[in-house]
Length: 328
Ligand code: C5P
Image 1: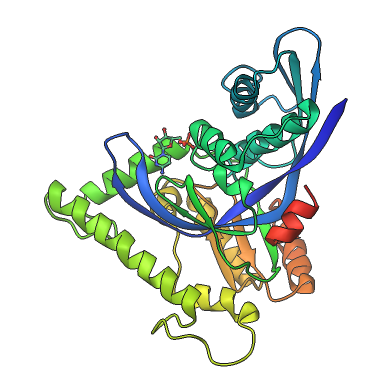
Image 2: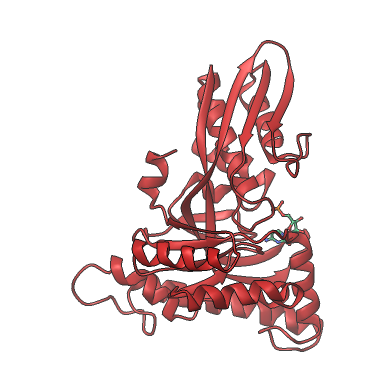
């Protein structure tokens, strides 16, 4: 039996990088949001042993470095199952695009493999295995609007933002996430980041203080008022949550290191704004950029305009948690 599931992409609504940790990772704060763009993953278990990855996209490694291979091996071990696992990746999302495709593919593999084996892992085991494979995997076990802390693997469901029309631009450039983090550290060391330049010890504590401040802003946003934290008066806040978040002045720290190296990406952010996006940003470490729009019609118009400028642009929408699991 082959089990097919969709593997949705994510964007980051703000991303703040903290100090490097002894384990080589960086503490961060981000709001992840799942979106409707997706790959398709097909998993089957047959006689024999081992793992086979099939993908027509030559940029996707089909060996044991593939996140789908790594997670499938862990799941087989965890449930004590035997057999040959075949995973087919129908690639539509960009590789190294900042849309979390490789992470999402791995989580989709885990869920499809459980279904193929007719075995169920506990929620805690799923989150643990996902975090072992990569920082950006656990968010896909929650879906919708998700708060990411720690190295990004510590995830908490947030109240869902309303489905929002958007445009995604996927430039033909891959950005290495480890390199982007290293470039951020160099920027901090040169005193060119939002973290005040001081001696390394103080720089670390300033970076931590900044994350704590970001948490306060997010907390105030969630509790009702971006300014005071007081509960919002009357009516549903759903419609204004996203705008409130944007008004808090969310930023993606990676833009500070990725834009100088790829100035064309900064130009695309401006093009998104000119095409009518209410808020435009790099997603993760890029190279994909997105623009949030007021309506589906606005997103469609913006995508057409950007394609006329020679960009690979597609109109899509954010996915709430319920939509995410319904369409899985
Ligand atoms: O967890 P993941 O495999 O996605 O991380 C890839 C690399 O990105 C890590 O080895 C590390 O160099 C860098 N990283 C980091 N801080 C994070 C997440 C990733 O420095 N929070």
